[in-house]
Length: 319
Image (cartoon, rainbow, N blue to C red; front, side):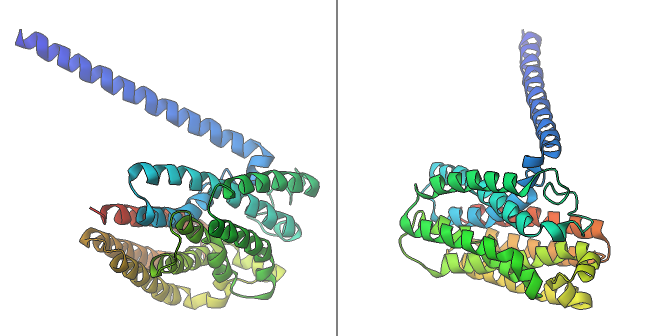
């Protein structure tokens, strides 16, 4: 009798494992099919859907904010869905604006010359049509939010249009990108709160510093082409001092996040995770070869992992 019960229990476990394996394979297959679609479809590539890291980096500071202002887990998940969808739309619209303005520059940069507008797969007119559709969708998302969130949404759009011109005249487009990229923090904050406090300001400043770090590293991929065509960046400005400067920026970033935790009454778990993020990021920075485009790209992508760790810190910090 005992053997029969064990046999039934084992069969149940086997069926459960089979069900999990089948669903994992289904998810993997769907992801591969989606990746294939985005690589082959010029409109998807114009929206950068084949490079989701940009969307992930935009949305993470917003999720940090939502952990502070959400009433409960259901509220958090509902807001997360809205803001992830909004991040996809706005990041895609920003990419199209950037590609329309930078079409002639992109033709002369190894990494960007395959972009649909630069290589002629799509016309400027087609780019504007897709941009108009995305902006209409973005407006439909914005109008369900409070008025202050709408104001910041329009500010984000205004800064997005200006951003591509900054690298023509200033060595600090990464700083401007930081202020532009992370407006979502205030949109998220005012979607729930009616008043401002130090918390969203600290999260915003942290996100700006975070953007400066990862986009400076990212810009090191293109520095040879940028010198040839006269495009400026913090990678060129910092040059051989990049590691030293970013080391300090990392530390200020973590200190700002620590102040956020103190103002939000988060527990010791949050601060322990911040220490881990600082240790890992500084070690990775110290070992990177900034003259290797592959290493720079890999380090850039690693910042998603750091952002997720910080998000976990915000969540566990409430326990």
